[in-house]
Image 1: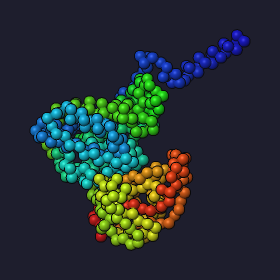
Image 2 (image 1 turned 180 degrees about the horizontal axis):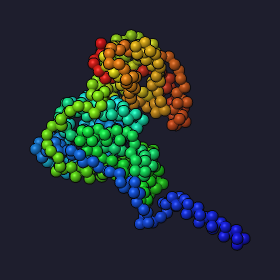
Image 3 (image 1 turned 90 degrees about the vertical axis):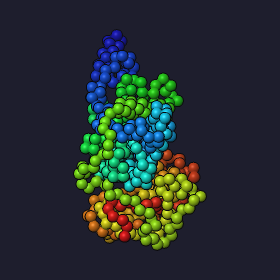
Image 4 (image 1 turned 45 degrees about the vertical axis):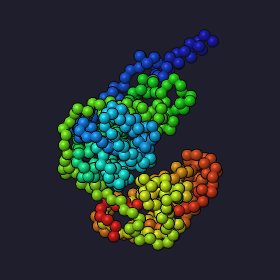
Length: 433
């Protein structure tokens, strides 16, 4: 028996020796070693700073701050609200105006089309751009095209608008940070930030540092973790009470550092970083396209029309068999639409080539703004496009069950329609013909 216990103790000792990370959370905080690769990641690149923004604060009464991004920026009481309120408190003699132009679940490949309508018409003095998370699924070359389009459109509209890139994160990026690595998306954005001298803030680094110090758990139920910071419940979206304040504290730290830095003056647009960037991205109303079949313009009082009026003032609902066609000259084309319980499938024909696209996914238990890029590397010539709402009664319950097995059963009737809700036509090139 004695020999048996000795063997068990030896095996346990070897396991602890070879797998120290298993017991990492039980180590006193003072004994934790800092991860060298993580510490070497640069949290902030000052570059040209925000001189025009701070000059405006010093010399004018009203200053506009704009936020362009996804759901992490859209969040109520999130880093957007916290940084905006910090500016108001720290510069009480200035009237700050906010342009909140974030849309959940969308990336820079929609942002580049909507930046004029949603941001630039309000003449921002500072534009925060946050697409590092929602652009993760995009190829780096595509990120370069769309993000550069946003930069060049902004400075074409007003050369004195300062821009700052904000990099947020999701749970699986912790491993990248601990290896001292950044996602290919952030690396693409950093190339542009270097080229255009735009400051950038890696807001997620502090989150990983706190996690390594044993002070934070990235994803958990806060009601079951009273003695530790819970960053998020869903691996992505920070909690307003304990996640977003970390992002905001990092951003504010570097806003302070940039206050008395940089040279006031217009940002000069030289040759583009990539020649086929999307600075010619345009958004056109469905009114300008030829329509046949059952299309209905949703009017004030309609649930969807009222909900999305800010970003998509006109939404058409197309029933089965409804068609829409147009011509354009350019290299890319897409659709700015709404998807949700009552959406279905469309057939897209571009220059005679057909394919079907399902506009329904596992998140479609509610309606939300979305977009789809149909083609992005066309020859720069005239193209013919036709959109048709098709009658395909696919299994919505099966799709929804990937996230929530019970959501379909709670209200089956709201999923009965298979329509299409279209707001705008997206084109990189010249207008509709």
